[in-house]
Image 1 (cartoon, rainbow, N blue to C red):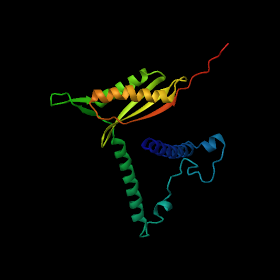
Image 2: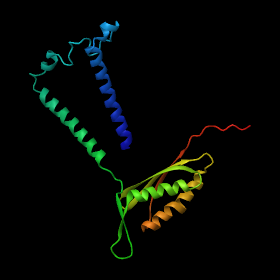
Image 3: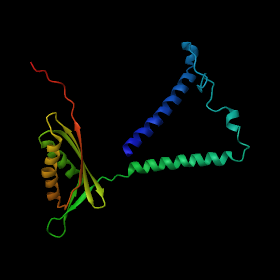
Image 4: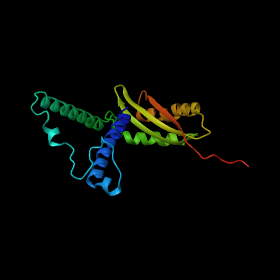
Length: 198
């Protein structure tokens, strides 16, 4: 969800900046006169001396009592949205480390990335899996594994998922001393060129 929202917001911001940048470029370089073309009437810049806001536009609502409260409220809302977005990027639910019972009463710390790497490499070793990616996220009940598997053309999804649960996840649960390791696996078909049969 957050990745989709990031892409949409970045796309919209990029589109607005592109339109503003093109309008400034066309107007400041006086491209209409040099290249002999006309711009639509809504285009904000038509010549090198044009400005984004004219003196009339800047001072039109200055005497109205509602103008400054509305401007400050809109800018405040935009600031809050930007701060929310920034903090949402910084907040990661990725599991950094996991305490493993070593039997001596003290325990050991297992890095989350190490377990992710093992999950990915063991998943890739299974028949029918061409590539794999793994990520551990922190949940209230304990860690949860999220895997993405690229399947080869001959792979059967049911067999891949059964092997993943019976072998890869079971070894990860046992080695980390976990009672359970819930997992979400996303299967993707790997595209290959068609082979010719003669």
